[in-house]
Length: 182
Figure (cartoon, rainbow, N blue to C red):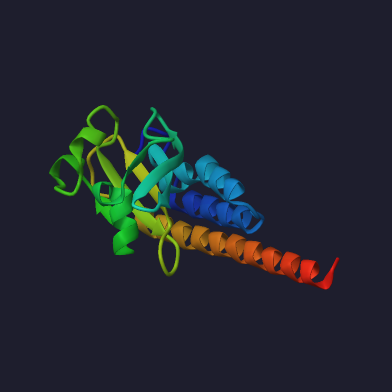
């Protein structure tokens, strides 16, 4: 499946459990993105992983770990990008062969190693993030990988909600302190 050594499904679930434990200790978006960038590729047994954030009508690729550079720092129209479509549809998009999927803007992939991919939206009510896994070979994405990435996306969604809730709570505490004069 991947250019990196093929971890067993059990090892990948173990890596997922470890990643979820690390996410439980994340209290900032930067921490969450770093944990994903550093660990998600092993979970997916992929040649690349990317973390994408929605910014209005665009998406921005904020982090990656891949065998070759992809799109970190670049922004694309949400409707012209698979990560954006996954967010808008609130559903994963699995593409075994990028050359055969009409939703792709092939120019985005022409100069990359990417030949198959899986993109998972992250976020409960309105996904504002996505996690993408990429492979250098056109191939079906196995059900274990889909389950692992879906589990990871749910865990990241919960982490980001926790971070948002903590930020709102801090804002209310500060407002109450200011109103109380202290």
